[in-house]
Amino acid sequence: PYLGNMIVQWLWGGFAVSNATLNRFFTLHFLLPFIIMAMVLIHLIFLHQTGSNNPLGTKSNLWKIPFHPYFTFKDLLGFSMALMSLTLLTLINP
Image (cartoon, rainbow, N blue to C red; front, top):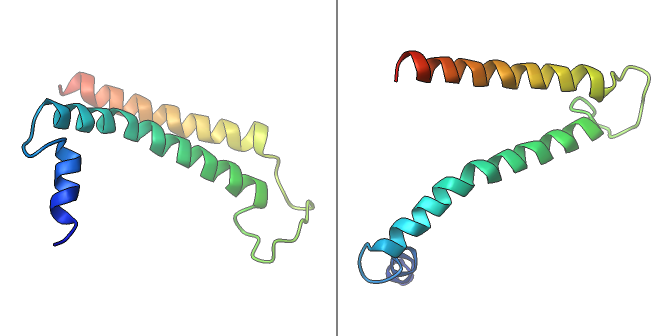
């Protein structure tokens, strides 16, 4: 109740929805996918550095598969398949 009006005025850029409001939300709408993609990439880097199935945090390289040729190819293949599916969906049924 105390901060609600201030937050609304800050988001709107004034006392009513105006051009500043639309610019802010369009900017957020444009930048949000890039922010999410950067956070996912950072998550993947940290996940593959430490290993996802290593609760003790020990460094045992006996059973590890190298990330670069194997998992990079798998991730790129999955990303390209998802992108191709989305492209086909948008082109066939616009």
